[in-house]
Image (cartoon, rainbow, N blue to C red; front, side, top):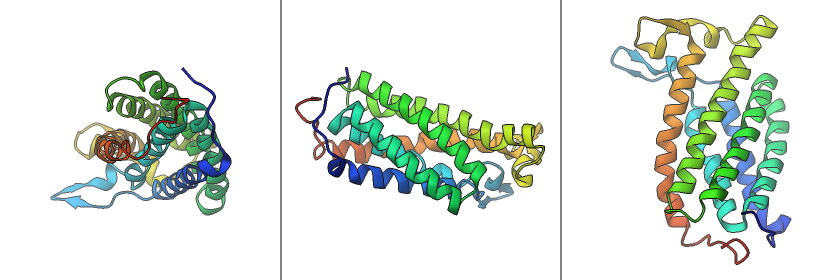
Length: 214
């Protein structure tokens, strides 16, 4: 249950800064395929660099939620979102900024809701389950807006992203490359989220809930 928390703008400044940097970096990096070849397999057909950075946003949200509660986490998400989208429009691509901003808001709000409901469960359940559901929603919304809807309504898009390629770079089924990116993006997000459970566990000893949210 959400409670009133004694937080201030100063106490949340670090979270807002971290959130804005993670989202901005991800908005830029998602435009760059992961051009690594393993044997005859080209991972550019499967991944973008943004998949490796975005899960850190859930770590920032969950640690803020743990320390200050859901209301404070929503403020970090909202202010970080505003800063990141404004910078992304200038430094990235407006279409990517719109897609990322929309996906970011709905995914992070779902993450906050789920984490708040599970905060008293086993230590790993709240961060992992909330990140899992948030990442799934983020992937669907982002890739749907950035590539599928852009192509449908504008009649054009990133030619490399919307070009046909074997699904996941492996199967004989041809599909727009962004679909393989979406599947690979979600898989990597889950792997990174599992990895981030380790620093979350360590930081639990430092970032303890305030009395109002314990």
